Image 1 (cartoon, rainbow, N blue to C red):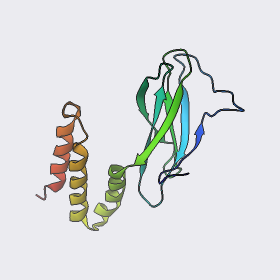
Image 2 (cartoon, rainbow, N blue to C red):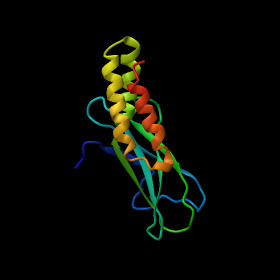
Image 3 (spheres, rainbow, N blue to C red):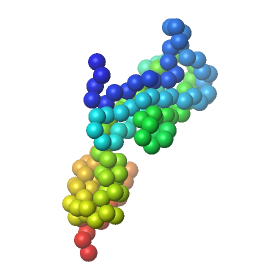
Image 4 (spheres, helix red, strand yellow):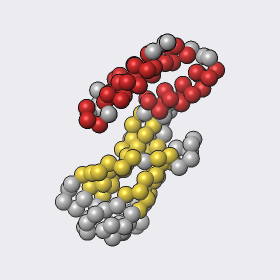
Length: 149
């Protein structure tokens, strides 16, 4: 079954049941096609799981070229053994808002509403940011978007 945000054509992949191989410390690319219905942006991570079952770190993936839906990241296993990886994907409302605002604001289309939507979005996003990792900066950005002076 394919969900609302499909992750397809993940590479490297098994070839005739033989695992992809790398040595400890060797960096390799993981890529996948990630998309969703509509115009909303998506984001993705590669999650490595080591031989002892240790998960992490999460490595953000970047779109190869805008509009291609093809994402990639470089990952590096740090020990010998059987490693696995998973590609996680989700809707990215902040990127969707930034992309829409970059079109609407210069055109003067609903500027006040667009800025208010951005401020509300950043305020909600700040709840998930640890205090020591920039929560205040996210809230300051939200306040700046609300400032009409």
